[in-house]
Image (cartoon, rainbow, N blue to C red):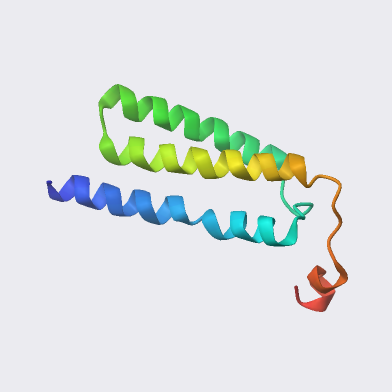
Length: 98
């Protein structure tokens, strides 16, 4: 593996796993009222475009990163739909330091 591909895979890993803590937090709290559907929806559309681009240029780092990120982003969107009526518990409020 050449240096550029290794660097690309490292960057792909770091930027892709950045969304995992949010997803875990969503599952634990069962509350996503502080997330923007428009932001995650737009982001997901961009990830789909990047994935298509990566496939067109046959770039492993771009395809790998965006395949994983698409799965996590779709999971976040699903959580936003599934937990849409849930309200944050008092200990999760900004005033309580949550």
